[in-house]
Length: 119
Image (cartoon, rainbow, N blue to C red; front, top):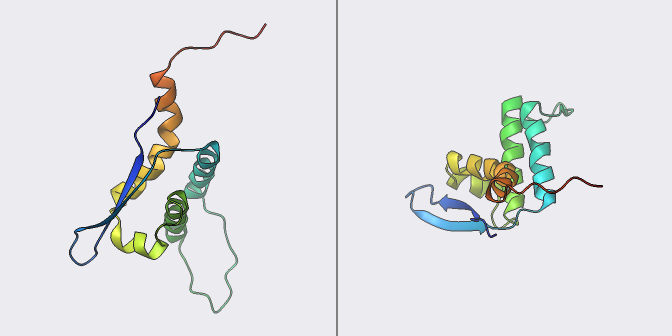
C-alpha cells in the first residue's frame, strides 16, 4: 500500500507565485516519534535560559520556531527556516505536521485486519 506523499509548496513572497514544491512519501517511525515529541513542545515548550544580550522570545514564538525547524528537517533541509517563514502558507505547514501524526491511523483504516492474539 502506497500512501500519498506529504507536500509543501514555497511561494515567492513578492509575487505569491509558486517558487518550489517538495514532497516526502516515506514517514519513518523516527519521524512519527519526532512529531509526537513536537506535540509535547507545542503543548508546553521547554523553558530555556536567556542571557541578558539575547532577545527575549515568547512561548508562542518558541512553538512556531520548533514547528518550522521540524518541517525543514522533515524535508531534508532542502530549504531554510527563513525560506519557510517567508514563503510557506501556514495551512500547508500545519498540514505537514498533522499528516505525519495521522499517517498511522490512515494505514490502520486502509487495513483493518486485526492480528490473532498470541498463544
